[in-house]
Every structure is written in C-alpha cells, then in structure tokens.
Length: 601
Image 1: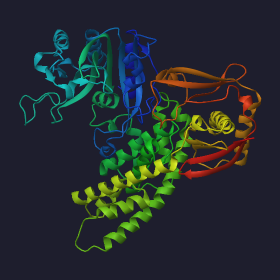
Image 2 (image 1 turned 135 degrees about the horizontal axis):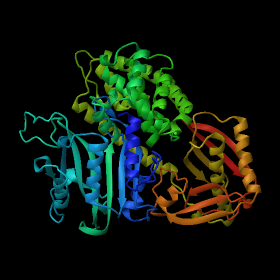
Image 3 (image 1 turned 120 degrees about the horizontal axis):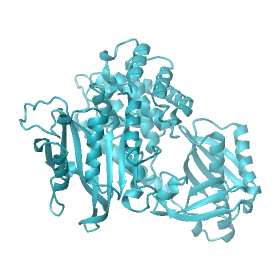
Image 4 (image 1 turned 90 degrees about the horizontal axis):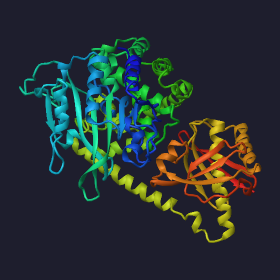
C-alpha cells in the first residue's frame, strides 16, 4: 500500500462511519506555550476539554507534526522530526466498544493485517482509578486471546491531563508482532518489551476522568475518544520495510541523494537519512513562515539546517545540492499539503542563504578547533571553557560541536560536559537578567500625560495596520517578532530574509495610509483564545495568553476583514484618528529579522 493510499483509505474508512474529515492544522499551534503541533489531538483540544462546543460529533484527520526533543537520534530506524499522525475522535458520541471495533476492522480488513499478529495493552488500574475491565472484555469478545492482552500502569496506559487539571483517562494500545518469537531475555515477551519484537501501531485514549485541582480523579459525564496512529510506522509495516526510509515516502529522495553524492545509501545510511529527513522538516517548517533565528522555532529550524549542512558535507554534496532534493520531497507531498509547493522557492532560498552563512562559520570554527587541539599533547579531551567559547563565538549547537570533536578523534568527557552546561546556564541567567533590565517599561495605561497616552494608542493601532500591510507586500508568512511603542514612534520587528526595497516601503506606507484615509471602524470582541485562533486572528507566538482574549478587527468598507489580531489594547475607535503614517527607518536586527521604525504626523 502506497503512502497516498494509506492516507486516503484511513480517511474514507472513517468518513463512511460518519466522521467529518478535518484538514491538518498549521504546524504552529494556537497554544503559545508549544513550539509546534506534535499530536493530532492538539487542534481538537478545546472540544476535548469542553471549553468549546464542537461543530460535529465525530472527526478524523491526517495531521502534520514536528517533535524536536530527539533531533540527535534522527538517523536511526525510527526517529523523525517531521511526521504525520492519523487519528479519529469522538466528542461525547461513541466510546470504547465502537472505537475498538473500528480500529480492529481497519487494521485487519483495510490494511490486511492478520489478527493473530495483533497484541494489545490496557490500563491495570491504580488507587482511585479502576482497572479498565471494559476494554479487556471488548478485546476478548473481538477475538484477541487473553495471552495477547497485557496490563500496564499510569506511565504506559493512562493519558493526560495536558496541564495539572482536566480531562484524562485510560488508553489501550495496539501492537504488531514482528517476529512472533519470544526474545531470549523473557519467555513471556510481550508489548513494551525492549527487544524490538513488537511495534506500537495505534493508541486509543478514552477520556472518562477529570483530574481536579486537589489531584482527585472524578468520572465525567462527557466521554471523549482520542486516537492516534504513527503514519510512517504503519506504512513501514504495511510495505514490509526495515524503516520509513525504505518506503515510498523516501525512496525517491534517497535515490536523488545517491545520484548527487555518487555513493550508495548503504555506505552511510545515517548521513543519507539525516539529510533526507531534515530537509523534509525544513520544507514544512519554512512553509509556515518560520525563518532561521536564535530564538524558539527559528532556532529549531537553524539547528535542523546546520545539522543537514554538516551531513551533506560528509556525503560530498556540492553546489546547490538541496534544490533537487527539495523538489523530490515536494513531489511526494504536494497533493496532501499544497502549501509546500506554494512555498518551495522560498524554502530553497532560505536554505541557500543559511548554508552560505553557516559554511563560513563552520570553516572558522574548525580552524579554532585545530588551534585549541594543537596545544594539547596526549590529552584527548576538550575543556568546558573551550567548548563554551566555541559555542558563543560561532553559535554552533552542541551536537555539531560534538560531531566535529568526534571526527577529529577527541572526546568530551562527563566532567567537561558538566562544566560546559554550568557555564551555559550562568550565561542564560545573566542574559535573562540583562533583558529584563534593558526592556523593562510601562504600559500605555500607565502614561500620565493624556496627549502622550493618546499618541501611544494611535501608534498601537497603526502597528496592526502595518503588520497586515507587511503581509500583503512581503507574503503571509511574514510574522511579528516584537514591538515597542512610545508616545513618539512605533518600533515593529518582523520576520523577513532580505532588505526591503524603496518600492516595497512606499507600497507599505500607501496601504496603511489608505486604510487611515478610509476611516475604518476598529471593532473589539471578547472570545476564547482557541476560538480566536481558529477564526483567523493573528497572535504574537511568544506571548502567553489567557483563556479569554480581546480581538481587534479592522474591516474594509465592504465588510471584508483587513486586520484581525489578538491584543490587550487599547486602540482608537476609527482609523481616521491616526493621521499620516511614515516609515523613518528599516534595518536588519539579526538573521532573517528586520525592524521598522515609524511615526504618525
């Protein structure tokens, strides 16, 4: 079964069972405390928590995800930064029996997996939370023998809540028996054994409890279902391959790298996999408008880019090696995710710019390594102080520093690694303290002079117009990265990989002044944060927002929305109050980050 067929079969199976097919949400979550979407359930969190009434009772989706806690592990058989999740959800509709029945039917009939190779786990219970006897009985009734049903505790078979309180419940996991032979360590080998015999396919979560602030687990009246399948994992199994890198998701990409590197995949599987996998993640992340930087998502992207560049060099890839590989990845995914084809050229440009910068940095860093190491005689380790100096001077992620030292035959022992970590932690502490001292200030409401306060309010509203004008001129991937407003001027930081032209600046000014001259109404609405995001309101992702937020909407004369942003305010009632908008300065403040200063007169 091809990748495209598996996605289609899954969605059609559940559509026939009355589920609404929901498109994948953006990789950038509504929850500002998360960098990326990492599970299919995240876009449904308001429905699962009961904060928002769902518009449908049943849903299914194929969700694009990014997880970055195991970047260094990518290159083995199982780890990925970008991956897809298949899932189906019930919002107080069907529950355990229907969920288990459909999961079993999909795997055995649609996927043709023999039932005798499926094993399951259930929650064995703990203190006030009962053993999931109901799920066990259902599995037995559906033909899974008791010998293939294992019981585990909270760590393996209980999900949630997301925070300290909220919906949670037992889960039942479905495993595939690869070898059908007990391992040497345990004759009773079963799911969760670390021998590699079993691979988890599907997790079925039954949200039937609510955890209170006192830590109690109370039975809920509302009962929701949340399930998830690792797409690459199931596809690998169905195509009878050793890893996802041998499936049709990657086979064309691997062949392209072989052609460009003039060596075979088997000669350096790890390097091939890292380049292929990371470029896939880079393509999807940049398609969301994220650009390389030293903060948050931009830092994750930069780490992926630099790690890719290091391994591309190991494979001997030359010139614009990334372009044909990106084209191959786009071909694989453009039907399911058309946004990546739309942003293909931008992604190529981002990679080219970062590669040029990083290759220069890497060359200088290697010279510094050689200088440090040449001073040592028989000592084969590098000090924590030297590690930090290289990290601070060249901005290299630690894993790349380690890869260079490994390549040169040196080690980073525990003592020096601990020393490096301590220096880094102190550096972060001082940086945080400095930032608080430098950027501490007062809110608009605290300005005492009424004239100055009104001008600050005017400039605050102008930033909303400016933000949307930038998106119209430079592209929707342009995002606010920071702002500062005084009674004299506004400062607006935004993502952009290049200097603005004179024509672009003039066009931005013209758009803002056009909206001012039209005298558009500035409307204020209060709504749940999740609802605001789903309605298309922009949010500054570094901020932490309350459950209920204010949304400021500026509409055109015909009723269409020009600007819609989550903001605490305050703002003017009508754009005609603002005066003339003028950009007085535009400059770079970092890699792919620009700053505009503007005034109203």
